[in-house]
Image 1 (tube, rainbow, N blue to C red):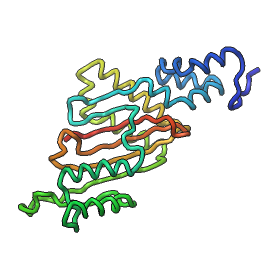
Image 2 (image 1 turned 135 degrees about the horizontal axis):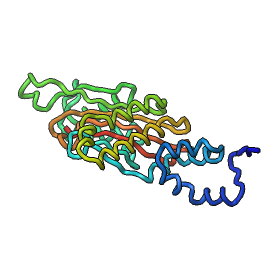
Image 3 (image 1 turned 120 degrees about the horizontal axis):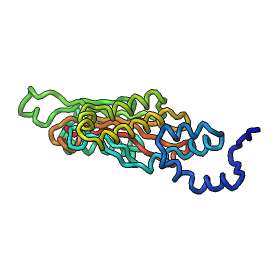
Image 4 (image 1 turned 45 degrees about the vertical axis):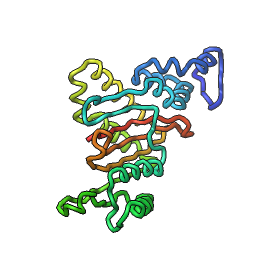
Length: 242
C-alpha cells in the first residue's frame, strides 16, 4: 500500500538521511533524472520542487559566447532584483554617454526627468546624441528600460532559450566539445526549471546603444528565477557588448 506524504512529515531513517544530504544527491544528477526522480513519490516531488533553485545553483556560474559580441551567463547573481536597480544602472550609462533627454537642456534635468519617466509604465525614451550639437544629422538615441514581475512559464522559457540560442553562442559551441556539452547542459536545466509552476520568474531588458559603452555593454536581457519565498535566486542573462 502506498503512503500519502503530508507537508512537514518525516518518516523513517532514509527520509532523515535525504533531508540532510538530499540537495547534494540531487545536485549530481542530470535535469532529466531530477525530473524522473521527482515523479517517484510525493515526498521527493516536494523536496525537489522546494529546493530546485538551490540544487541548480550548485552548477553555476556557466557561460556561453566568451570572446564574441554576446555573453550568455547562467549565474547566481541576478543583476537587477528590482526595476529601480536596473534604472539606477541605466542612468549611470546615460550620464557616461552624455545623452540628454529630448526636451531638456542639461544633464541634471535630463537625469531627473528620465528617472521619473522610466519609473512609470513607459519603457523607452528618446535622447539627443552629444555630437548632435555640432552635427544635426546624427539621429537621436532610443534608450529602453523594461521590467516585468511574475511572468508566466511560456514567456520565461521563450526568453531563456532566446538568450542561449544567439548565433554567437551557437557558433562558439560548434568549435569546442566542452562548450557544446555546457550548452546542452544549460539548455536542459533551463527547459526543466523554467517549466516549473512552483517557481517565480521576473524579466528585465535594457538598451543604451552608444559608442562610449562598446565592449562594456550596450544592451542586455535576463530572466530571474526565484523559489516561492524569493529567498533563493538565480538568473539567465545576456549582455550585448557592441
